Length: 301
Image 1: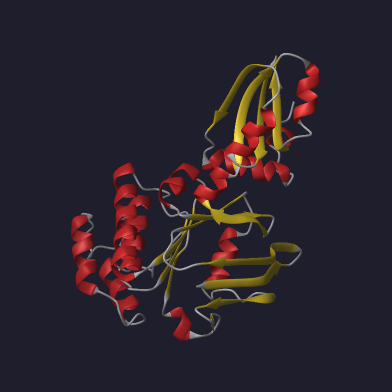
Image 2: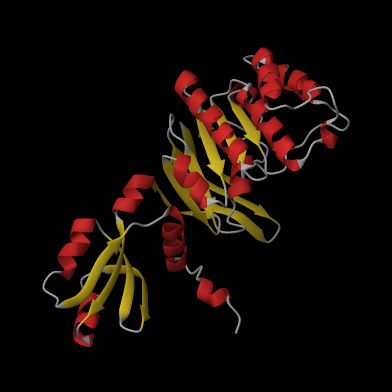
């Protein structure tokens, strides 16, 4: 289990992470999503022991991370832009990590690179962005760590390689109980693979919940009332996050179960009423708008 308690990290006047508290349970795919500059990458670096927090602490299975090799040996961090030694080959990087991680599987790495059609002997500097991302994932998977942190996991991968990466993660979760922590701006991608999502905004946590629970407790309704009095009255019955009206058609996003929202609309004389399924992207927009990250404020006339 990863326990993050009241972590704060600043870079000069910029507070990248602010009093952030969150737990990540083992055996699940955890998706970390957030607005631009929310602090996701900084948090991953703190969780991996690359950075030390100004305040608070991160515990991995009860152990501190920063300057603790015994804890770090259970973590592999793939940054958004992976670093490789100058003039190194994939074999060089394999041998380097094999010297750090005692469970490193060189044989599996070589097989993976063959399957990916990556030449392990040529310089990595000749690889494309997508090839470097494939190499990073292969290096991480073969390290045999309990936790893998992937920053912008699927960026640069084509659809086939994205599916292959997901399959590799799923295989190691099943075989050895690995726990992946993923960040991505492609929320549709995370929605397909993640069990749990933490939403980061301005260095703090807006929410951390199971994806299915989030969908069950947030409803999107499109409706047309027969009169304006009923339009006003429904607002007192719902915990509304977003409300939009175009002509007579109202679109409302509200907290609550499907049954609770349906019950709130009972007794009103409706012309039209429909409940729609929310995507992870719509949930993200709804929650961040409540926190003040409103797209309408970003659009210049």
